[in-house]
Amino acid sequence: MPVAHKSDSLNKPDKPRILLLSAYDAGSHQRWREQLVASQPDFQWDILSLPPRFFRWRIRGNALTWLNEPALQKPWDLLIATSMVDLATLKGFHPHLAQTPSLLYMHENQFAYPDSGNQHASAEPQIVNLFSAVAADRVLFNSAWNRDSFLDGACRFLEKMPDGLPDGLIKGLGDKSRVLPVPIEDRLFGPSSRKLQTDCPHLLWNHRWEYDKGPDRLLLLLDALEDMGQDFRLSVVGEQFRNEPEAFSLIRQRHQGRIQNWGYLADRAEYDALLRQADLVVSTALHDFQGLSVLEAMASGCLALTPDRLAYPEYVPDGQRYESNETDPEAEAGQAAKALCQLLEHPPAAQLPEPWRLSRLKQHYFAEISELLNRSDRR
Image (cartoon, rainbow, N blue to C red; front, side):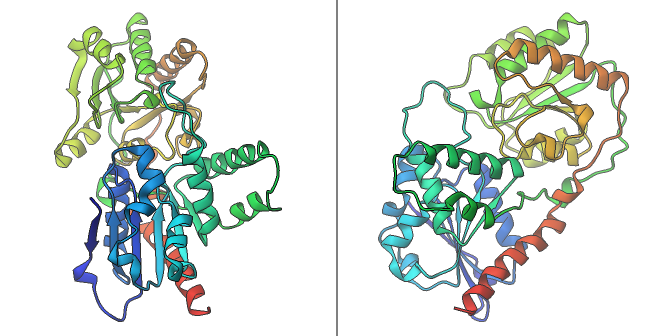
């Protein structure tokens, strides 16, 4: 079950030794850790990962799954854990790691996930996130919205507790928190002079096929565009699952003649080509802690059309964000359709998300890691 990886090509005894733990190694988590290792050759990396299934068991049981893992019996210069890792319990199970500096990377936080209505109510995922953040020396978030929603959610959660809370807990978490996004590969950045097809734009919706990405809102938006007489072409791509919201089948039924691409594109080169071909990347998400799919499309020259919420205000220009209305999907779809038509009438120049480039951000990752290693040297 557990998977151990060693970066043999980087395995030199004079390099600081880092153990990276990914307890729910889903696509974005796997991509991030592989990118991190490849971009930081000054360190020796070993990796423990667990497959992305059985979410509630995985987030609560990962420290137990790794109880007899040989890698955790060894000394390390630094631990780096993803947000699904139960870092506090892991350090308790392995006391020799308690003084090892640790960095927690928060791809997401359990305080800000929307409720699908079908989930078993439990505070344990939130407690794992909270306790891991307390146990870490540094907490990195992939967006300011992720950081702020975590701190706000943790504060509201703790306010419900009857007693026994330490003073200054949330302030302490905020003081050791930083924002450091998942980088966008430099190869995706292209010229921003692409001409927008205003008569029949190619719309790209490139997200996980799950309820929290708002496929029902996408359906309402497409219907609204059709009612307004606005022609369009459509590509709906992204990771698919056994059970998917009904909205996808309805989109396919109602807009079959407009569809250019449908379903998961396994070939990365084919997906990259689609990013360069589309005119606008569309989000209808209720949950997106950073928005990698939108950032990748923007880097490739697409204009964006996103709700004015979540992490999007951090990088999507004002004129490309439509009014957010989480409680009224039809009203929000109307705002999105209006904003899209305004973009087509007065097309802005594409703005590439330059600060998110890997070649820039890898230096910040190096600095964060080096600071913690230096702290370890002083102990």
